[in-house]
Image (cartoon, rainbow, N blue to C red; front, top):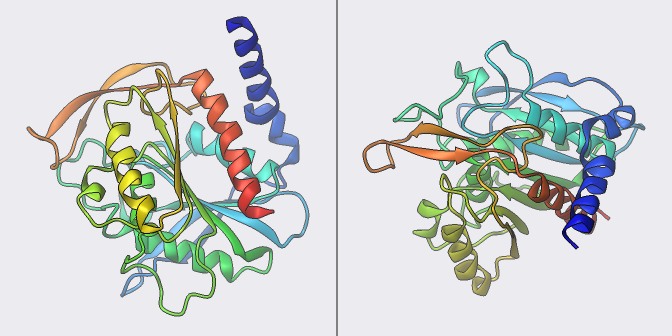
Length: 291
């Protein structure tokens, strides 16, 4: 039975998840675009756009990076956003990878104790700035735009779709259609009277010791009776970063003023079975809301 499971996982990775399996179905290399945050005064931002085949209009996905940013120190797109952007484009979705760090002169904030950009402060405005930019494009369906985030970007996502968020522009005709959050930190959010305005899918690692699953599950259990359309997939033996294409399991030190002592050591690394299952679950979720 275990051999069969591994074979099925291999098939999912090969036909849904492997970058080589989708490369031919992407229209172009990532294109740099410029837009502004929805804050006042408007902060100039940039991002990378990946287009699917065809003229559209297409459904679209905005990707929000984690605390390490989406670019390497040399300015190249990292492996995880490379995979997900091409995989999404191969499924017919236009993808905007919104960069909250580079335009602000930052690369990574994972080891900065007092972080200058926060998921509950600047970044929800960035997400709505990206939404308004995509809705202005003729090749995008303005009512079929989803939000995806990882770690710090997933926390941003949850603050962005919060029913009472101050970042939501007045008079918005179409809000985010759906949202998918990979291993967000939910401790601070759980202390609020949280209610999600947008359908949310949580992707959580059961073994995650950086952003543990339990606070997010508690948040969801509290939010659902208030009318929040939320659900979660929890993957056994999966640590933070479990969906990364190639990352080996390792221990790193992260710093944040919210930690006791200001820093802690955590595990990060890929889990092939969890990654394959998450790819399949994301595909099904987007199909449900984009059909």
